[in-house]
Image 1 (cartoon, rainbow, N blue to C red):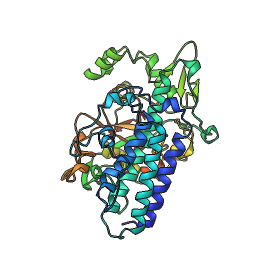
Image 2 (tube, helix red, strand yellow; image 1 turned 180 degrees about the vertical axis):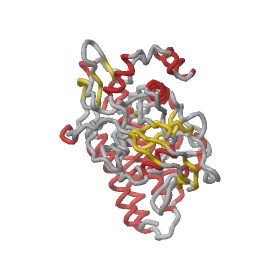
Image 3 (cartoon, rainbow, N blue to C red; image 1 turned 90 degrees about the vertical axis):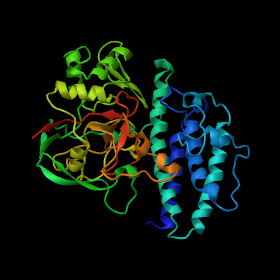
Image 4 (cartoon, rainbow, N blue to C red; image 1 turned 135 degrees about the horizontal axis):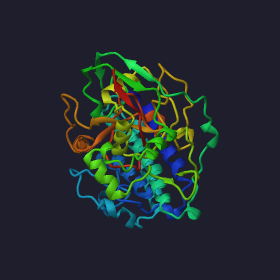
Length: 420
């Protein structure tokens, strides 16, 4: 168990980083909701404060809620049915009240009270684990603030799109390596979280699994490689697609990854830092599971299982192009290879072939916090590795992200695998 002082430091730094991410946003952009999948920045700010208040402060002796009307409990509850009803998710962009200024006051109120709690808490108090969960929950919403903002900006006509400040100097690329295949022998592997550091419940129980021999691509698929797939009729050849994937192509009229634009030649891509010419050496990003699976089929390969991905990532340090770097877009391979593997962490979330299901022996925690992960183990696929929008301290080799197979607004990409 980490000390209360260390957790307090993590809490303060996490909340400060959220403020750093939202400071550049114009007040007009705090409220608007781009799609039902996305949430306004103001809602993210309020919900993360609500999480700490509802699951921690509300049970502290003498705590006085910031909102005495009880409306915040309804407005900023995301999906915790055991807490109570929730304001409809697709309508979050209609909440012009409370104002952004009021939400920032709400956050300061929560911070003051939670820090006071941490200053007096017993070092063995189990409440510390809930605070750690709240810190990692806020980091998830830091990523969502950025990806939801990018989706919002994409809806504006090109001349009117704002440019979020990015640190272009951190995107310097090294030598671009040819794609190679790294071999992993068959073996019984330990899968799941190991150690005393923080973990989500869906990374447990740690268990053994027979993983057949496989090959993993040395780096993610690049824009250059994905363009070859497109030029070979990738979006018009039904034989490359799963049935639901082909239906999604037809329904949504997909012809390229999300945020690619072509008003002439060459392709351009929208980034948080503005629209620019597509860099062919960068990893392809904002593709759905269906697109990733179709590309893998076209390439004569497949997507890795999450056990294969975790087996390969175990000996790779968690370093790379994360949110703290400030570039906020996948960069061409720039990290040295570890065991022949490049960019396992950061840049793009990598789709796996594994449905998001429970590990053997998994039991969701009791109470409302048990709704955090377990009830979503249906109809989704696992992604691994984090992205350029993910805080680095949030990621580890056992981390399991998950989304529905048609979703594209997160920074999702492709790494290939083959049977050995």
